[in-house]
Image 1 (cartoon, one colour):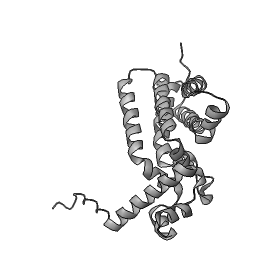
Image 2: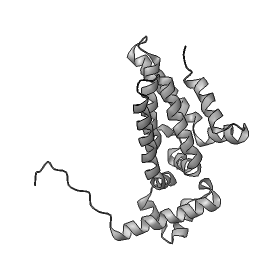
Image 3: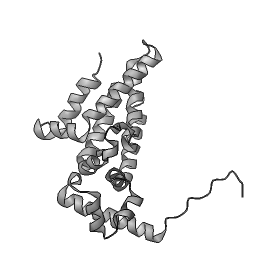
Image 4: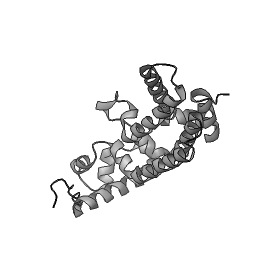
Amino acid sequence: MDDKEEAAPRPERRDAAENRQRILGAALRLFDRHGAGQVSMNQIATEAQIGPGTLYRRYRNKSELCLDLMKDNIVLLFDDIEAYLETHRDGSPSLRLRGIVSLFVGFREKKNQLLAGVEESPPANRTRPRALSPLYGQLHEILVAQFEEMSGSAQDNAAVQANAVFKADMLLVALSSESYAAQRDVRGLSPEEIVEQLGLTFFPERD
């Protein structure tokens, strides 16, 4: 066997796999009853009939647990985004940004509770930017690339990148659970209207 050949990942122990399924099943039941934001890790441990230590060895916080619940859906979301970008590679960055945001808004409509759980930071990490989470980190990189292209080359590279990062940061804030709920539930905007308003604000079509 070649020393450089990567070793196959060790399969998950049966008891660990059973605990994982028990935890995820308990979390889904509680989220359905009370909403993800109202459920604590201790409640999940009790529902799963395991000790809190077992739960925290598997998931450091509820955000990680919600990410695990959504991981297959997240893969499909980014597959859809990649396919959209490939299909529209000759289109304008504004068009591609609109498509990305539309896909994410559709994803949010289907997985809103779990996304809210992903965004929930434990007390020690209250100041951690949401964009650093695995889901939002990957989305942030895609948005930055589109904003950089939209900016053109009139400015120096550092200025273009800083501007693109700022716009991506602000767009992710606008797409967060709290901001989205304010527009959806308080302002009464439809998902399509939210996408339209975000387009006018962040990536207007140029003549």
